[in-house]
Image (cartoon, rainbow, N blue to C red; front, side, top):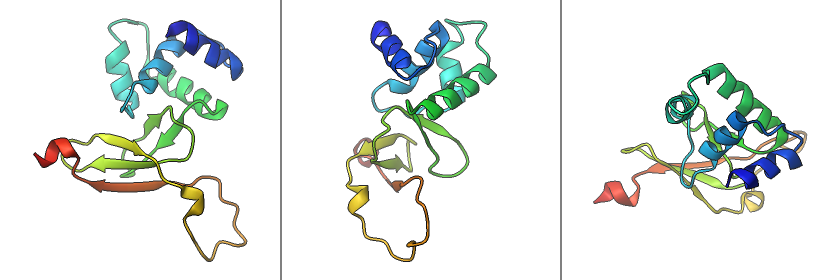
Amino acid sequence: MIEHLSSVLKEKGVRASYQRIRILEAVSQKDTHPTVDEIFRLLSSEIPSLAKATIYNTLHTFVDAGLVRVVSIDGDELRYDSVTANHGHFKCNSCGTIYNFRIEIDSIPYQGLNQFEIAEKNVYFSGLCPKCLI
């Protein structure tokens, strides 16, 4: 896994330091959309010299390189997603888990934006996940 992530970073022109590889690995875990605090808690015991500022700067580098995207559903916290292709997000109102789902965002009709340049498209749903419905 480390070798794969290292090559992914190099392909995007990002220096593949151990910290960067581990941060990318944390963001790339299945069904996670971690915050900076969650990444810090996950990695700080393994990398005691790791600072939150390093995580913020690394994630900013990853966003600029197209390796991750920022997810802000409720506007109060930023989360990070390693799936950069257009897709939707569902946030469970009970447990807070965020799930990816497939949606053809480009085929959703919209009007009134003819003179606008659209930089990003997001679709967010919220409700209860199957685990919390039980």
